[in-house]
Image (cartoon, rainbow, N blue to C red; front, side, top):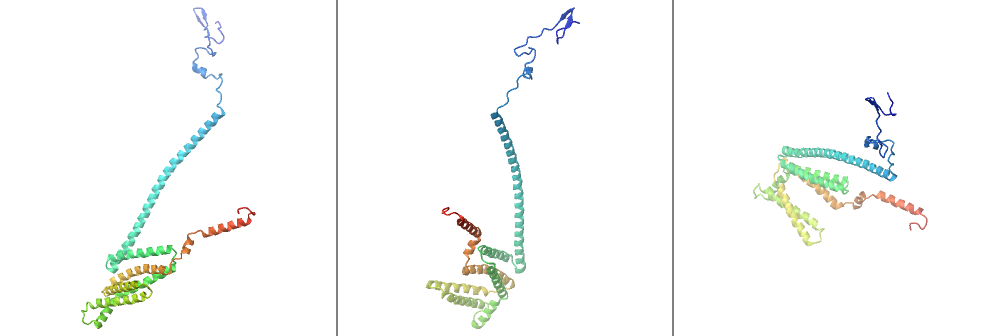
Length: 313
């Protein structure tokens, strides 16, 4: 079998040897029938030049920026999710605290009303006592905040307790009414027996107010102030005398005594502050960093002593 050209197949037809004629290569040296895609992928071609330093720096910068922004976006998304969870948790905790406070208020108010109804015969005493207690407690807290000592607050509280107990015992036993009735039977026998305590109590209270007003008027220099003080204390004494002439009974007397004790608590505290005042220097020292200021002064003096002459002057 005849040999063809090297690397070229041959065929025999009718006794004639046929050898394929090679195609004419194009300008790239590749046969025409070779696809153009193989030309681009030809490993014999020269590789593209590598990117320059500026291009590499730019690409690195863009990659770093993209990576950073990706982390920032992730942090923002996670922080938003965590913030929502924190807000939900804080809201639930706040609601729980509010419910507990409401429950404590209900217990306190309900207990006050129950005891007032059970012991004193009316829930109105519970409302009145709760209001007066809140006022007295608020006054105590304010004065404690501005520096009034615990001893002064304690003395006022003990005095208020003594006053409340005395008023409760005296009114609960109807002692003023009985005293006024006994005096009226001796002084005003012609007056109806049911009215005698009121008349005697009013007169005795007005007289007591005049005496107290006269004693206080000695400290006043103005004549109009003395007259106003006398009249005012006389009217107040008459009102107190008429009030104490009423027959209250044990329950009402105890209720009035408790109320008077709360009022006396706040009044004694106010009188103590009006008499002794508040130590403003001590109050100022409580809210000033005196130790830091003194230490800073000592440090500056130490530095000044060790500076060379002419520096810092």
